[in-house]
Length: 184
Image (cartoon, rainbow, N blue to C red):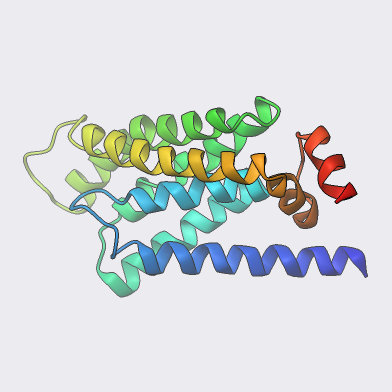
């Protein structure tokens, strides 16, 4: 019963993250950049792990491409950072800054480099170079990463981050805050 409850909670959280990512992306978007996507990726990575974050970024990208006419950059600019954010977070044993660095590296470097052949050859976009998207992707992911860092640090300081992770069945790293939060 507990396992089913946790699974349901994860699916609800994933659905909420996808909904938030889709709804706020056109509102807080700068041409060629979507900092809110990186905010959602990092928060999802920290709360639920790399695989859920990858799934979330993929779902948001596909929905944005289908219903908003966004080019494949919605995928190439999100999935690598989403996954690496969760991987770096786990490898660092819960350092939020490492989740941000994973997102910046995955999106700003890998995602931007993968975007070039996708847009140049598959989408027929001329005049691009291998590093054409790198400055925009680095700027967007840094903006979203800063907001995510501030948000997650505030959750951590309040003792809520570890509570959310525990409720979702994710790995928790802040044991001292968790015992304090449980006592309250």
